[in-house]
Image 1 (cartoon, one colour):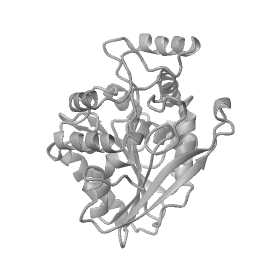
Image 2: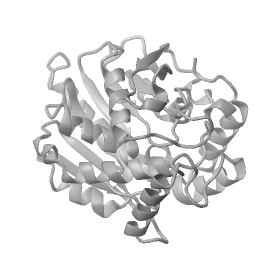
Image 3: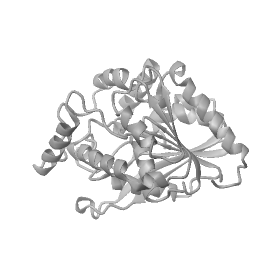
Length: 334
């Protein structure tokens, strides 16, 4: 179940809910995983009388326990929350012997993870929404563009700091792409990217506070949780992950399906983001027929886990849009 400790599950204390955990089998067409069962850890948190269901989709290096403050916010609004760990991270199956390296052969595998969770019948209400962060937002857009432009049963999508393209400073983007390609061709696909390595608690704290969130208490909660549950730790991405990301970015930004997405998509941009390229998010939004971009000034990349002072405008608009949709009738699919 969700890791229980003073730090991991503290955001949920005092909230009445039930929870269900499943390990969902997923397929992989890659020869190195043939005969090796892969499972995705998925959890549903359910208040006594849920008004609607939220699919919460994490980013790279995420884990379910990391997003418990977000789960708590949603539960307090009587919203059911379904979430999961991508393959290769959190409590889902790790793919290579070095379980600390962020590795995936291609982002299409992640799309299969997303589909497996959506198809698992974990939702108990007809009013369904998606809230996705970074790589999760990237994959939700690809899932919509390539598989379900009508949103399937989802009425509204909220994306935070969408991975529309990567910031590669101090190197030019073409150089980072070339290096990842050459490293994979030369047999280093499973190696950490240059300068990367295993999870380190001090480096995690420093990087989190400089690039991800200004909320010191939240960073300490995550750090202590990872100390107590090392099986959830993940280090830097591998060259394979980086190459897969660059390839998927090209697919997303060239997809004709983006213009066919009919479900409303609101993208929140972190004003001080150093991880994803905000210009690419605006360019992506320009191709959506029912899209909106909202900038959150001063916010770092982890918008959902930023301090309350910074991300209050995000939650205010999200609650407003949610209530507008629910007022149309919870029994009517989008």
